[in-house]
Image 1 (cartoon, rainbow, N blue to C red):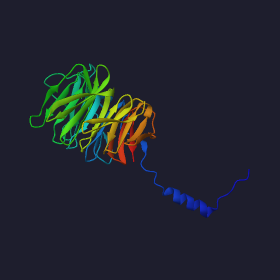
Image 2 (tube, rainbow, N blue to C red; image 1 turned 180 degrees about the vertical axis):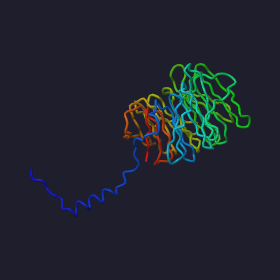
Image 3 (cartoon, one colour; image 1 turned 90 degrees about the horizontal axis):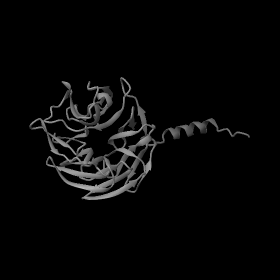
Image 4 (spheres, rainbow, N blue to C red; image 1 turned 90 degrees about the vertical axis):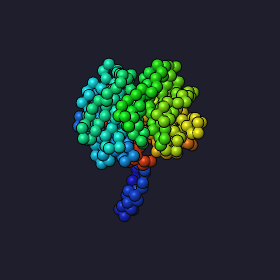
Amino acid sequence: MRKKMIPMTAALLLAAVCSDIDLGPVWVEHALPGDPAQGLWDIAASPSGEVWVVGRGGEAWHCDGESWEEKSSGFNDYELTGVAPDEDGGCWAVGADSDELGRIIRYDPDDGWSEEDMPETPSFLADVEREPGGRVFAVGSGGEVWRWEPSRGDWERIFGNAALLWRAVSAGADRSLVVGGDDDGKGIYAWIVNGEVKDLQSCGCGRLEDVKLLDSGDAWLLAVDGVVLYLSDGELTTVAETGCSLFGLDAVDDGTCFAGGVGGLLYRVEAGGYEQVESGTTENIHEIALLSLTEGWAAAETLLLEYR
């Protein structure tokens, strides 16, 4: 077959035009410094753009907005499953020890890592969140919700129910939202208002795995069976039914969220529908932390994904 040759000037023009095409942000692998990650579980970003990621063996990394630095806690038998940035460059992290007892540790930029004194030993803790005013909530198995008051500097268990398992908590401007499941595997959620758990409700999907409470007071919710829901003015609406196991979700507004899960599956979800996007990995995606609609991070099992 005779090949048709493109004149050099036309080829150069085509290359120049193609190089100017903006394909938008994409997800790509990002190497962490130091030793390879044993297993990443959670990633969270502060409003200022600082990011923390934690995982197995007490491992942790911090990004100041420019570069990543290893900040392993030294609690090598702890499985850290939740992290929340503090306003001073530090963070709160929760999880469990080798006996599956709940643990809360804190990183101070001046003093490093330390373990929090608790009035009693918590059950396995899954997530932690800091409200804008400084109040901190830790949630987990046994339906336990723990509250840290900045004015007193101590922890108090404010809720517990052996039939419930909380998986995630998200803070808004004036209240927080906690999600999980009951002993029948059904999704549940509750508001935390003025530091107290109120209005426990059930939904018709599987266990809720993650939540993002927006400044507007609306919220995105994610069920482990791949259902994405939107909560607004007390009404819960199903937005997407992917049919896949999903674990982590994040959003920056009411129009779009990203949800990730098993085998590197990643979805962009909007009010009008959803689409699968290329994640660049086949590892399970455990959590997502968006900085904006065009930049963010995701924690897979042993690596980070950057959205840019």
